Length: 446
Image (cartoon, rainbow, N blue to C red; front, side, top):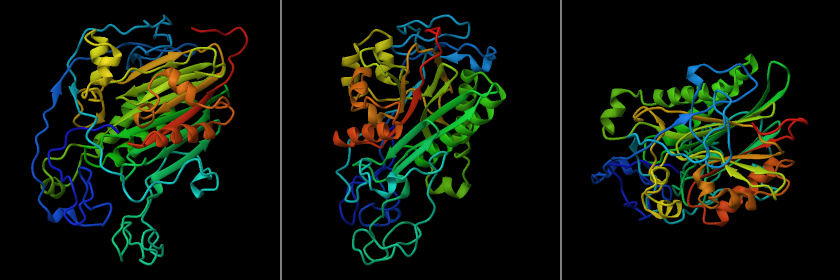
């Protein structure tokens, strides 16, 4: 879960001593009102590091305009730029100076109410829901009984009126299918809410050929309302793609437009009443990362800001898998600058400091996009760091993904989320699976 420094926080609940998350208004274990306890101030400076970006675009559609040409090099699989030329395989860029925000902090102990296991076939959460993005659930059913004491009624805020326990939220575990694409999001085992969000959809291009798409967002935990930020961004991005692709917009230009629109949606969340700002004058604006993918007419397009990732896993596991995105993070910048090896950089405690995000206080919005033409069928895995922290390399991700991932994308997503939970589930976990069909005969890599 992407994070920025918090200026004020309580480490433990004054009532029951349970660990707290920054920004909590109530204790997740006992429901204690934390607003009556003054939080001691803490100072976490923002660092300035290095970064950069390069060009990129796709093929077969009319060439996108200048607003759709911004991209960066993928990590492994060669792609094409706006002129149809191959992208450089290794990123060697002149350093810039984006802000950096810390993406990790000591994790709290496990919370008593865990999210459903995504691998439980008979779980109510395992039933596919209608197409569309993962939405923020409404108020709890007032007639519902508490899962902890089994006697108290649950109020509209999701807390037991008898024992005060917070109840599992609908967003704790979400599954969706839309045509050939599927996604699963889970709260994980250590966090008291799910701050990830996703959207999956499918549509048709002007020539009638199908297009599948997925957008995954990771809320920045140390910002205000990260769950709202990720939900707003994923919704805005998929709405933009569903409007742009059927009218013939090049998929890479559409992805660029979708990320810009998602950023605007997150920016708008910072417009709060004066009373809200007076109550918490030191909070950060809502923020999140974003990664998306489009599969259409033999073309694979990815776009991202932050450290959520996309991976390519071919059906033929003897062929090499690949990571398609390059993190906006401290570690990635150190590797790109040649100052550290990848192993050294990701072993550093600053590794997950993000250098790019969506939000009103982002240093500069720089959407990255890249286009690819795989020469064989496979799947695209779009995920937050809650998954890739447990399968970081493309090879590790391919080992975890089931062999029939393209035929059973929802099952694949459940297996991948289960892998993260088995590994400790320290973060929210979200993954979308997009099958890439066999390209037409005679087509090859661009």
